Length: 407
Image (cartoon, rainbow, N blue to C red; front, side, top):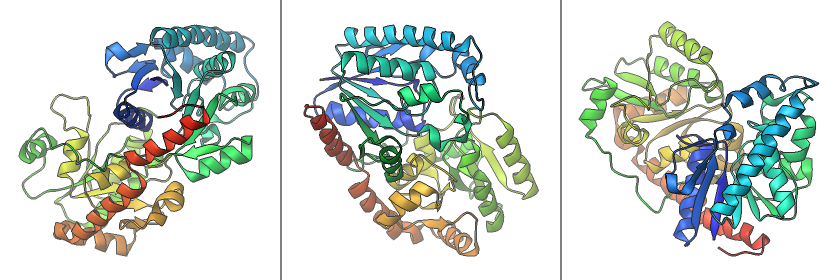
């Protein structure tokens, strides 16, 4: 079969882009073909359809966003603007499905979180009008994010985020989302967590450790404490700064793998000021800069990974650190508590603040990396059981069966 993935963006290392690639790998391993529809796309051109207006950063979409959220009513001209884009994107979807002979649509968060109202509405229209077999992969619902508050968009949210139709089945990435979907909308969902290919080892680094360390500016005995996330407030990077401060060793360098920008620069500036106050060597990398280390190179080199998030849809970077067999400090964010912690992982765990036991545990690992050997192997084995490609394969099979199809 031909599967058509649809989202605003398939590019970079955000969770939607990464997890959609993993689903595609599972489907292609089973003999199917995958195609991509989005406003920004780094997939092979022969299998992609790029429609600029489908990107959430398109000027027409950012203009809509500025006039709808945190409002109780919309400007008189806004519905016509939304409908115009809805129609344009609906025609583009129709062409995508026809040109690539799509058998199953796979919206990736596009009828979940209203980053792009017209695209979600166009998808809902298409699914309903064609009774089209569709697997909606939900990462973040609008009710989980304060930025999508206000009553102005309520009719559109009720119509398409997510819609309900007999040809549409739902997948969520954590148990609370499944409960919310059932309680709020009466919709049943299959839980498919974020995963990694734990049956395969991570790819070896393309460059030597010495070259990567030089690119970051690390001296011979410096330790790399890696924060492998974007610079947004919910990542809790201030806790990583506090950890390095309390470790009180100038060899410890806190490296953030991604630059800021998705949600402005104010949080980055706050972190820089905080690091200055606490005498922490904080470095932000730009993944797009020439010679900048790749995320894989950073994981290979890391002495400790920090993941002190306050909120996550799931926590892809946490699984990546486990896949690279790295010790991890993690905050007990909600999905961690409900869906990850009960599996029995051996992490350095904090509950909203850096404390003496977490500092002592981190210091012990930094002084003697072999102290983490048993923990990282245990964590790998647990993740291979609960968060592997094989889990995706089994549960995609279940979703396709609900559509009268088979994997």
